[in-house]
Length: 222
Image (tube, rainbow, N blue to C red; front, side):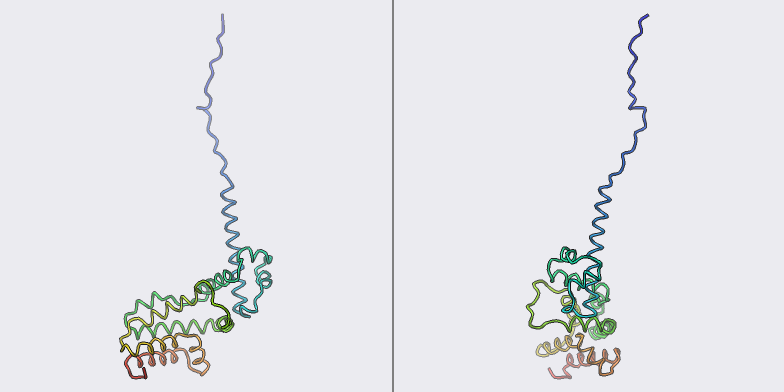
């Protein structure tokens, strides 16, 4: 009796397909990006802390690297020039120091009430961040060339000014004076001088609101 060849069985249809191991490359790449971001944030926070306590002009790359726990070349790797470091430092300070946003101010229709609310927020911000602002704003060299890009802090202050000046009704000849007085009321040095003279923030706020309202009504010199 002849025995035929055994029939070949397609075992691939009967075997349970083993799951392929998940690639670790995606995880490693994601973790690396997270590490890069964490290092950059640590450097930025270190720079801001030094700027706030001793001023930008006294802050060295070595001091930033030491406080951040990295090497000097790591700081330069993330921030190849001083302007990129200052920009990141300023944005970090704005996120952490609580500088007001202009949008809620625009929601207040009456310009007098908007000014009172806005100055109240700004004067509280100035008081809470007085040391930092003295060290940073007082360390600006007036003879230095202007930065090539827009400064985030200056841009925010311009947005806040626009919110406060909007909606006032006054004679055209008085408009420049009104804008100058609003800018003066918004300035850090104005709050600082009034505070140094012994005025609490609420009284300083009321005083500046009265001055601006007087100019708008033509009751004060234009």
